[in-house]
Length: 491
Image (tube, rainbow, N blue to C red; front, side, top):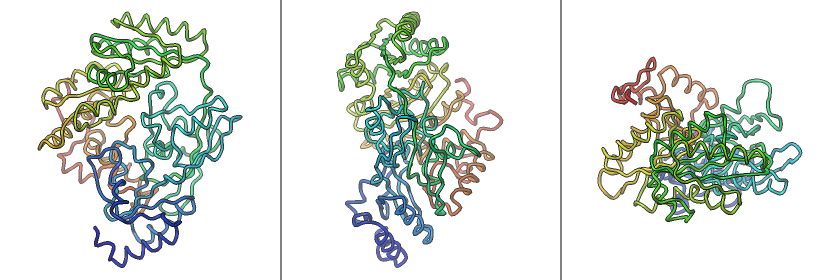
């Protein structure tokens, strides 16, 4: 790849990019490029040719024009916190980082919206809105670092998305530049717009359709009262049943998170949140509303938890106690990182009613592959995050881990779910996309990609597998509702 520096074609492109951006806006040295080799999925690495850091929308447009005219791939990048390899660079391409476009343009308290540039951190939106008693609801675990542009690209979730929705439900406007140089202004300050819902298409498109430069999000009033409950169970399936019972009663908590014993022990040793170390599983449930409503619903939920088999229920009404309980969950991923040299974070979704079955199946796979698994997931919407512990220094363990992770995702599909809940497909799940979607569906995906990005320069080889790839994997398509893996049908 380093020979590209002497290639006249690439030298010309680099010169044009440097002329179009401020000083320091192009990174070309090996040391400067190294932090951009991967996103949060560190097992998938590739050193980019160049990294560019525009500061304005006009500079983004200039980068896109230069790359289009010289047939150079472009990989848009937010904060690099993604977990599916979606921001993996292209060896002969440009990483287009939006990190310097980090201005909050407007907080409109009267209309409960905020307009921000794509590089603004998720948490910074709520911090800016807090003076008006407002906040932005979607809260990924990485919210202290992840950017709103990246959240739109991945349709990110978070612990409060059960009640308040994913990114797609909280973004009402965006400015996006296509690879052809067209600037699209989708939506705005109103909750609906005439014509096709292109904004929804953009959410979750993983940088394959356009480069987001500005986002308009909805803001919500801070609820007057909040209660957080921690329920401990001696049996994982009892905890899963409690989730279904609560939702079945028509109660939609603001958040409902579940952690198994290994995750609980890791989080407690790391965050000292007061979690019961003898629990096979815990549920964290947040309820919000007015005082009278919270009192009634809290009592109902506590009764349902105890009926399902909870042997301990803590109720936190004080903000400090609530933050303490949530600190353990928010710290779960780094906490699990202390248990092994490496871990592999999966992301799939299943129907809530099958949580117990899935946990049993993961336990069976853990024994089969002799790899420990810590389970942390958004129980209310069935979004699973099994963390497979391994040591990449041991020959074959990374390959076994990836194989096991693939089987977990295929189980999600077999149970009526999907291969991703919020982390996206990126590079990681291309093979499992062949399991979930038919050739006809994949052809439609490629048609949509071609309509937005005719030259295929934006984030190439991500998100959508080619039919050739699926064919090489043995025709791993779902056909007429039947999976190609008979051994999975029992689930």
